[in-house]
Length: 258
Ligand code: AMP
Image: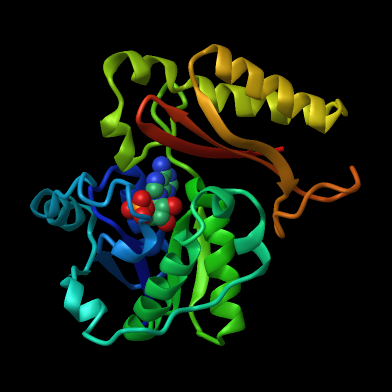
């Protein structure tokens, strides 16, 4: 019997439920975890404000056909004296998310390693929405010989292109109307790169357009999709455009394939 794990922080939307659906296609049993992991929030980030909707989440998971929900208490994941973490390099040190959220991937990789080991599932489903995270977790499982195959699932979007995210709830109506421009801009960069335009210029033009629309970009970059390394030669096989931007008090991230 094949099993698939879907790690989440709750506040579930159609993006999470797509992971469950893909898990059901890949395996016989799907286990979903809900845990808002304090170790991946920096002081001053939205740990306290992060939406918690556990009852509704469990109902959605039941309807989606998940077999088991595991929502551990804090002390279950981090018993007193807890002091061991996973140390990372490679895609976790790409000067993308890691530059702006220095503790983030160590927190993610540590909790994901614990969940992988505890669950012992054959597969784990992760969204491409968090593309760097997908690469970090894939590498971590391989490097630590954890026999769980990480499977990436394409980003689920609203009709206007905005990537679904639990944090979209923070957007005002006006910001929500502006937000889809991020995805459109990433698509424009991908199209420019595809027809051979200069990558640095395409990215800086895109950052300017986002700024004019009211975004505050942390980064918008084109990278080698697999390693997340900077693009050194246009003959690199697969490239990815990745961005993180603030819109008011909300930090949006997104990425598209070139
Ligand atoms: P989170 O609860 O935000 O930590 O996300 C849990 C999992 O759901 C991660 O693997 C995310 O990449 C994935 N995810 C979040 N949003 C989406 C989306 N819009 N489409 C696909 N997967 C998503």
